[in-house]
Length: 494
Ligand code: UD1
Ligand code: CA
Image (cartoon, helix red, strand yellow):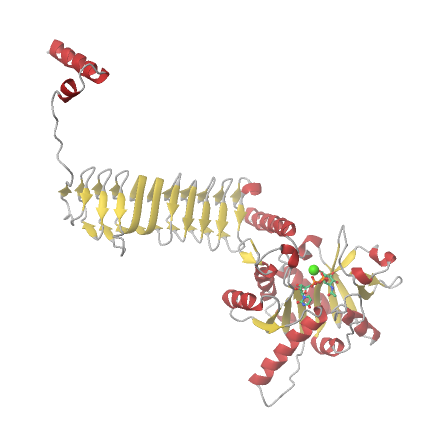
């Protein structure tokens, strides 16, 4: 592909997207973990272009800030008024020429050589593979311009591809609003994606007029201009017309999300991942798997989540930026920024917050919340506990219903527990506090002082039994009668 490396990819993203009915710019709406324009940028990157410029206009501060976050090497060009796709490309190319000028002032008016690929910012399903095929076709046929087309079931609203009856060559693209009835019958449409010879594009853009129904500079007019000048105009038909669908409203946003999700799951399954119920499994484009990972129904895998071999996740779990080690099992769990070690067990009903690191074969059991906690190999927190800001060694057991009391209302404090410890049920471990290796704590203790290795800490009120209290204070009650018969039975046995 490097032979076809384009000089530039220009992404058009200046439009407003009013039909989204949103305060968020259209191209910043997200599916499968990336913004719409983020998907387009990622697909464009697969061509390794020398320059990648996004034309921004509507809400440009927000869009520009987002682009800087996702790809530091993206440039932006501002199109102040949306005067059409041709005008937008012109703005993009002028930006590239300007920055080339400032980088190399001796050679002003620097022109772009090679291929320029143009894509729209609202087509998140477009793949790098299809862009690659377009660039290859363009180079192999020696075209001045190659348009990516598709046969669609309903061409309403799209620009139609007009071909010569005899040769089949593309002669023009006619916008829906400007088309005759006969042209509206054509189902081959313009995807809005093109490969151009850079110099010919720059020249032709200077000749584009605005005498059309929208009074705009149409990029599509460049085809007719180049053809009339005797240049080769080619077309590359997309294998799957759904790839080129542009998003205009939230119904299309949901459809695109479903399609992309299916594509990601299909790839994972073909790579050896078991997905029990693709219909209720949702993954981001950035999630990675090893073969023999298993995903159960109702599971969302988001961000930089990674599932190692034989890891089992779900049902009903949401993992964000979380790595799950080989053979670990995670069910009914919400985890964010967590590392789950090989063979570890999480849930049912666990909540792992950022900074949780569960060692190999460790356990975060039922109704257990963890945050910023490093849990050593084989250590178990089986039931009803909160572990926050803690380091726990290996093969320690934390009793049920324990709380790591980490917050004094102003500051967070750390708790350190050694290896092979047994803390009792219902402990409050008041940080900062340290429990040494091999130590025990009694059930119901409030641990406020360090516990030396190997000792037993008891920190709770002494029990006192007041004999005969019920008979005196609750005479004639069911409790008093039950106590009296128990007393007689004891006396009888004795
Ligand atoms: C455009 C094409 C049409 C094609 C369709 C595919 C033209 C004249 N028409 O039509 O042939 O079938 O896309 O979806 O090119 N944009 C700007 N600045 C502008 C105008 C548009 O950046 O001044 C951007 C939009 O944000 C969008 C893209 O260009 O990402 C396409 O613009 P849009 O208005 O949706 O074009 P269509 O009328 O759909
Ligand atoms: Ca459109």
